[in-house]
Image (cartoon, rainbow, N blue to C red; front, side):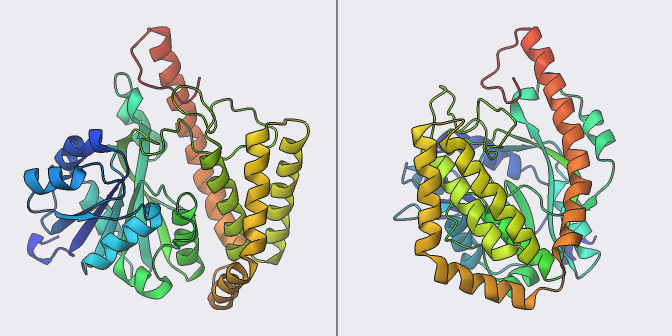
Length: 353
């Protein structure tokens, strides 16, 4: 690709209590081998980061948000701040392995007008001492179409935003990038899982060790705990509430019935067999929020469902295909973490043990 004809890219950084990552995130972005990009930084926490950015990176647009606008709101502000051909939603706690990461993703998206979103392969940052990156490339040797990629690093074509709008700020945190990508898929755009691995700390703004949903039968003792092992029910509330909202807006009738049934069953399970007062309250507060905002949610559902051209089954096939790769990656990451623990390596946190 001719450097002078590269699409214009705007990289969006949203900070919330992540001042420790400022130096490293700007260092890794500025090693990127791509000629036409700018950075917009937004601080959702008023922790002094804006002053630091203005002093150390005067070429960066720095915005001090008067209140916490959330993940969706913060990135939407960054996107609206500057017109570009592509936007990159970029977490603070990322370290790129490949200086060509952006070019690889842009090249893939430029291949087809319907290629709308691209992202890379997350590698947990604590595995750096022992991980063999060749193994990651072996598991995902080439880009594949997927149902979604991580919102920690998401390259989005401007045309997608023109067609489906920005991220839904009612989610505030969790599920907003899933909703956004599904709306793009439903409009006929493709999401690409590109074989461009990057290190990610994960959960540095929320201080949560693991941000996956609480499953019904699979025991996961670290879900919704911080690094000290303390339960964080507020994060649990947002995740569960937003999963309900996502189901109601995105899924067709039959998939919706299945999804809501499982969510209700999970509520009952945690209210009885696995009782924890804070989690139970968060779950019932989630159902309360849905009921109180039902008209707004159902209006969104009507808008989304009336214009979709891709069905749930096609998206589910993409999810299953990507899950095969994800499970292989998780198995390898778990193996590497076990080896590090066995060697008594100093690890800031663990995910799999």
